[in-house]
Image (cartoon, rainbow, N blue to C red):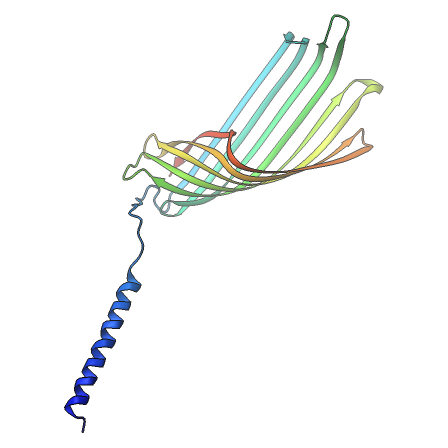
Amino acid sequence: MPTQLSKSLYRLLLLVILTITSAGGVSAQEQFRRGLEQHSFIPKGQWITGVSVSYSQSSQDNYQFFIVEGINADSYTFKLSPMLMYSFRDNLAAGGRFAYSRSMIKLDEAKLVLGADTDYTLENVYSLSHSYSGMAAFRNYISFGSNKRFGMFNEVQLQLSGGQSKLCSGTGEALSGTYERSFGLDIGLAPGMIMFLNNYSAIEVNVGVLGFSYTHTRSVTDQIYVAHRSSQQANFKINLFSITFGVAFYL
C-alpha cells in the first residue's frame, strides 16, 4: 500500500511535469511578429492581362546632323508585348509575357564631313532585324496599408530571347552583307508601383534593379566569313534604361 509520503511526492512530481510541459507549449506557440499588416490587395483567382504596342517611323530628305550631311533615309520600329498572369493566392501571381519587335533602316546616301578636304560617303545601306522573347514572371504585391488603389509589387523574371538581323551595303558586284542570329538569357528582379484607375484597370511602372544577362551571336559575312561573339553582364544597380510603363487589366 502506498504511504502518505509517497502520494505527496507523486503529486509534487506530477505538478512539476505539468508545469514544465505547459511552459514549453506556450513558448513553442509564440511567434515572432514585426507588426506589419498585409491586406488582400490582389485577391486569389484574378486574371491579370495587358498588352503594349508601339510604332515609330521617320524619314529624312537631305537632312544635316552636325558633321553628317545629305542624309536620305527611311526607318521604322514596331514592338508588341502581351502579358498574362494568374493570382493563385492573395497578393501572389505567376504567368508570362511575350515580346516581338521589328526594325528597318534604309540609308540611300549620307556624307561624313571631317574637314574642308576630308569627307566620306556612305551609300545604299539596308538593315532589317527582328527579335522575340518569352518571359516567365512571378509577382508579390504589397499594399500601402489598407489602401486599395495604390500598391507595390516585386517581380522576378526569367527570359529567353532570340533574334535575326541582316545588314547590306553597296550594289552590284560591290554588294556586301552580314547575317546574324542571336540568343539571350536574362534573369532579373524588377520592383514596381501600381495605381488602379478603377476596379479592373491599372497603370504599372517597373524598373530593373538586379539581373544577369548572357548573349551569344553568330554572324556570317558574304556567306564565307563566320564569327562568334558572346557577352555576360551582371547588374546590381538601378537600370534607368529598363523602366517600363504599361496598362494592365485585372479580371
